[in-house]
Length: 305
Length: 201
Image 1 (cartoon, rainbow over the protein chains, first blue to last red):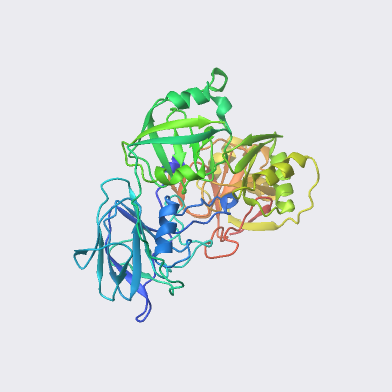
Image 2: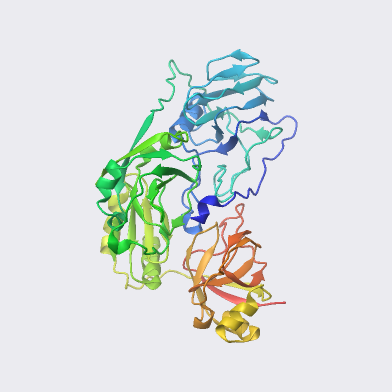
């Protein structure tokens, strides 16, 4: 599965803005900071992955909190760790796993209003992987194929953010909704992942039984392309051992089983086609938590259908 | 034709040939159901993804299809200018028992169709390759194939929209703008398009 290992080849960097425009400046990032929205579905027939935030409910919530449409572009912050400076008045919200939010060195609750010159510091969450940041007006880098999402597989969208990047903001369109109570995302110690069998469950011996009794952990080779699992090897039927599958279309959530039997659950930057059998598909509701699974997290499947 | 479930919102249609793949793809496209989000042809399958709740309408359409029915969709023909100076041109000629010039005549003389896209944005797998040019991939893939490279592998020929690793035997290069994310449509080639190659210097 070479596609998973293909290096991203980013085509564009965020543009710099002219004085007077609304913007924020990135001063420091954690391990990976990406612009994300709800992606660019509808182009899979051209080989373009859907992309977009892995934990979509967290991005939608952050956008609502600052008065943006839910599909506005925000930032996806692997292990938090972002410092940015506001160059204009704006409201920001941080969602996803619980972390600290500081403005000018003082702990603040999110959403929080920033004045020009204010520095926002997002801490590192103790659980989970990806925090989301929304800014009123949304991140307004140029869209590609209708989306501003950074796709690590195909290289579409803006490059990973670096210190010094100035991000343009759109005009604020709504009133921040605020929140009485913002419950932090609950990250379980063990993920129990529902999976609907098919389309190639017939390639495996007792697929429901193997999925139910197997035990895995999230591999450190996981990324936005897929959650790679290590543990029980899924065995094919005698008739399918050594057989090759002509490449076929993949959906987000597909549980693909390469020749070594170690499953990969495809996330939103997945290749549009693949040549290994897909034993089942994780439904959309269960995908956000997969993007929050740290390497080593225990994973089980709950097959049905 | 067999329908296989692919999660809560998609169905994988399995057929016997690339011709039947194109027939199913064209029929679903022609039906223009608002429920269809993605329509992804591949070697022997067509993946149809519906928006939430839209799968029953998609299944009803698919169950009414006969892949042999003719579909009246306008087809586009795209001509790709190619400089035939690829690093594997001599290898392809030797494997086919031809001269390089004969390889060029065969490759430019055939009519191709985009069977499907994949691997990278805008990478179109073209069917219609003459038999002598159907050759295996390189034993060891290149870590970097230059943008615009034109190659052959198995029953397919293709042009690389951008520089990626790749194991196809390269016979030439094209300057055609194959993929531009700022353009609408972004890809020069889309499933169902007809394609020809023209030799240029």
